[in-house]
Image (tube, one colour):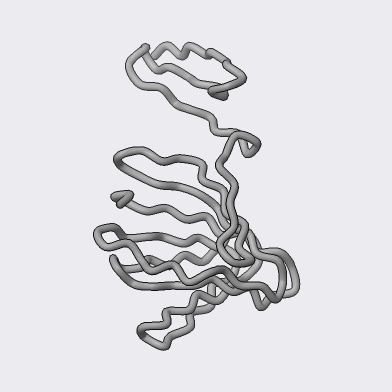
Length: 130
């Protein structure tokens, strides 16, 4: 197997495996950054197969209610800290501690809240990205 490394400031670093597929490195500084309520979101990857990003919340803050995604399941992974995931349609609250994950069914509204005493970081992915 041959690996070819190329680098472009605009594109980030890419690795080619046998010149057929590329492994792309996405740097934090090149992500799309936006706010949903008090939730700071970063979009790392968006293509026709998957959406991947992170959300950070300071202690005592909450994000906006996400209406859910009609045809895709979303996964949250608590990478740092702890959060509560509120499901308003079900009147349910699920606590995620560091290292926990939750799979959200298609179309289910949800909201992240940080009731911990340190910043929380949640990694999220949606497939398919609809």
